[in-house]
Amino acid sequence: MPTKPRQEFGRYLRARRASVAPHAQASEARRSRRQVRGLRRQELAAVAEISVEYLIRLEQGRVAHPSRGVLTSLARALELLPGQRDHLFRLAGELPPEPTSPSEQVRPGLSHLLEGLTTPATVHDGRLDVLARNSAATELLGQPHGTGPYDRNIVYQGFAPSARRVLGEEGAARYGRWATAELRTAIARYPHDARLQGLVKELTATSADFRRHWGRGEVACERSGIKRLLHPAKGWHTFHSEMLHDAQQDHWVVIYTPAT
Image 1 (tube, helix red, strand yellow):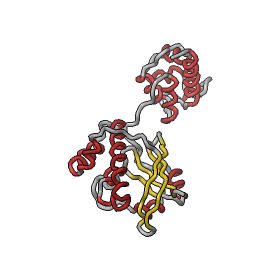
Image 2: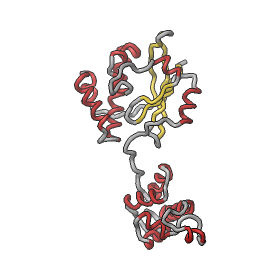
Image 3: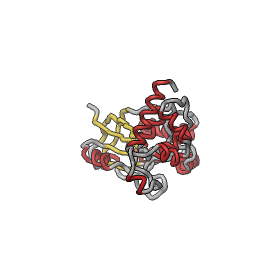
Image 4: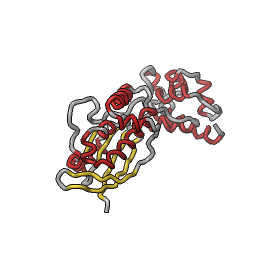
């Protein structure tokens, strides 16, 4: 880590230490006599399970490459939010930790935004399961039917009979290829996820089209597209689709706007 990033790392570490309330192990008497804001170095070092001397070197920018284990311990001890933790890792020249699973809850602000849109919009997570749809999307796409374990998954839906009804033969073929590539990308992000592995097993057993697409070895690259969709009451319409990513939650917002 070059000198300037080391100094930035040290400044950030000191600032976060100053912003954290003393931990429970600091007695009331000690807290009443505190001369510094936040945690003392001794307190942070104890919780992070590193030496005070090493913490001093970190804060002074004299450590070239703190380990990922040390960074993880510091983030935990400083009670960093995911974005703050990721910034700490980047300042140390490390990639932030990958999430072990996507969030199962849509942020309230995003839910409010979704319902405020007059064009169809959906939210699916990093496992490709639909978490929310606004009323316009429900009118266009309908609610998933059935009680199977994958009925809300956009890859599974792409190989269901309803895909050809909504997208047409050519559109369903393109969607199936894209969805398979999305699934391969999701498995690379969550390689030990039992649900994703089960989905691959299910589709491999039931769909020749999926087996053919899976054999291509493709990963997802497209985030914008044009889709021709059959509205149940208004007939065929063409939409521009745009995918926006909430990296912290690993949620994807898909917005459909009518093509002009």
